[in-house]
Image 1 (cartoon, rainbow, N blue to C red):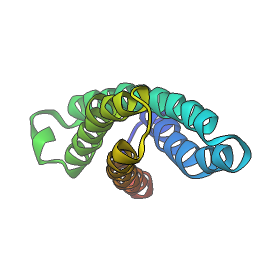
Image 2 (cartoon, rainbow, N blue to C red):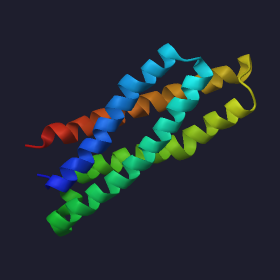
Image 3 (cartoon, rainbow, N blue to C red):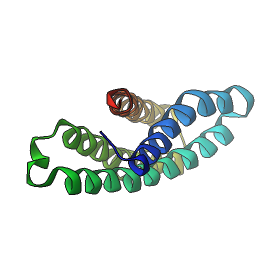
Image 4 (cartoon, helix red, strand yellow):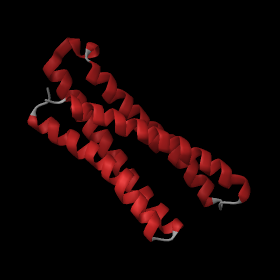
Amino acid sequence: MLLIGERILLTLWVGGMWVVGYLVAPTLFSMLEKSIAGNVAGQLFTLLSYLGLFCGSLLIIGLASRVGAQVTQHWMLWVLLAMLVIILISQFVLQPMMAELKATGLTDLNRSEFGKLHGVASVLFLINSLLGLSLVISQK
């Protein structure tokens, strides 16, 4: 069971993922020109990534301080670590690759590559949001 501060961190992080990913981003794309919506959504996802790295790290520290040496046997550690790895891959591998393609101009040739990278990033975001939901649901 998480302490109140940890519950707040988890709520901020996971709630942010669900709001930005499934409410704000689709709304942006339905209301704005695609390139503007993409730029705004990209900034929001970047901020969300840094928030996730911060909250996830603090949650791991909190878990380790409560559980002690048995932390490596706790399922929550592995979920949090998986979430952090997904953020690192998305933010520091996929996002720079997509930014590079956008900077060169999206032609028919690289638009397909951008779409594939965006698809991978979307699947990773879905996995992360479901992993986060599992942490929220597990709290009593």
